[in-house]
Length: 78
Image (cartoon, rainbow, N blue to C red; front, top):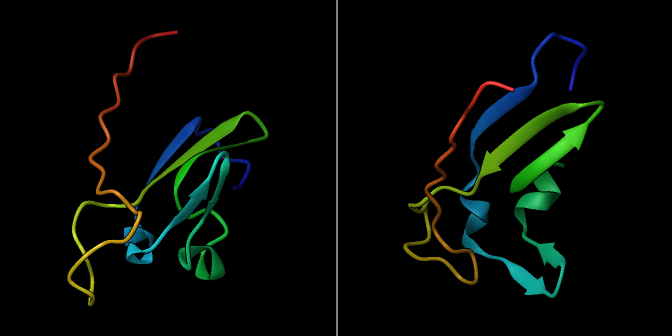
């Protein structure tokens, strides 16, 4: 993330590469091999980035332990 005056960036989506492994708090996907930030909310230096895993698929017509997601943000004045 850079030093621009932006508090939140909402990224596109990664499809999570349609495959995920989740054991408790541990989450992994092949997407992590290509993207450092591949799913979820990240915070760095008081700035936030949200990456959505999407709700469709790319190539392989399915998903394994990578639920489709539509994210709804409710923004309000601080």
